[in-house]
Image (tube, rainbow, N blue to C red; front, side, top):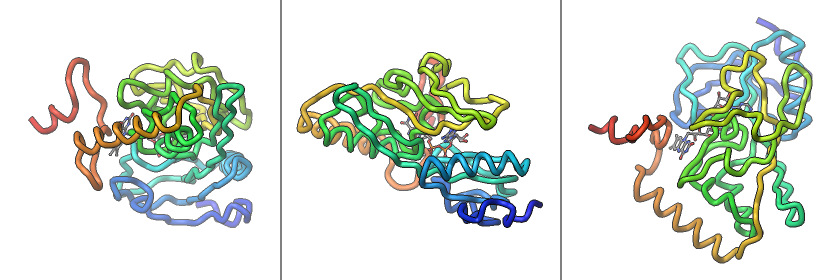
Length: 237
Ligand SMILES: Cc1cc2nc3c(=O)[nH]c(=O)nc-3n(C[C@H](O)[C@H](O)[C@H](O)COP(=O)(O)OP(=O)(O)OC[C@H]3O[C@@H](n4cnc5c(N)ncnc54)[C@H](O)[C@@H]3O)c2cc1C
């Protein structure tokens, strides 16, 4: 195993970090190496150093779509907390770091009177995880609102337009990509709206979610719905 000392010291890489602490199911064995990043620069450094040291790497958001084996994770797990938030009323876009929470994004935009992202109140996890899986709720999804996202691949980064992600139901072409791409940041389209109306909408959506899904630790919408049916109905049948 590579010595953790070979990673840049400012990353503060830990060893044998239990993944049960970082997944919503609360299960999973240790990661060989684990690092929390809070800035885009730190995220880039973590990606670059893992590739340079030839250590396999996994970027993770809130671990709400991850079932980690008891055997743990080989290589470096990057725990993404890049939460930059740059709204722009004039351009009709909001730029966010890929470690920003989706639900919090809905709340922050609503307070600023920026509509279009209310569905995100029902999506646990981060912007990066949501782009990776085209997450959605309440009849909308990432594909409907994403303008572009900055993606890191083998030391190069490029702003990819939404149509390049090949979005389909809970799918993007980042999945299964052998280059292990990482979403660094994303730009979402927003429209000027009344903050009070947006707040009412968010409260209604949150109530709807509470009424239809169990509270506390649960698998929620972890499973994809098959055509014409619901995973929840099939599991409980
Ligand atoms: C209670 C509950 C309710 C849920 N409800 C919904 C719902 O309504 N709608 C829905 O769509 N999903 C739902 N999910 C599933 C989950 O919330 C989404 O898939 C979410 O988008 C995962 O985000 P995350 O940050 O937790 O990703 P993680 O679980 O941390 O990672 C999931 C995958 O994304 C990859 N990934 C994460 N960040 C990046 C990045 N920056 N760049 C590249 N790849 C990355 C990871 O490597 C991993 O393969 C639910 C899950 C639970 C537990």
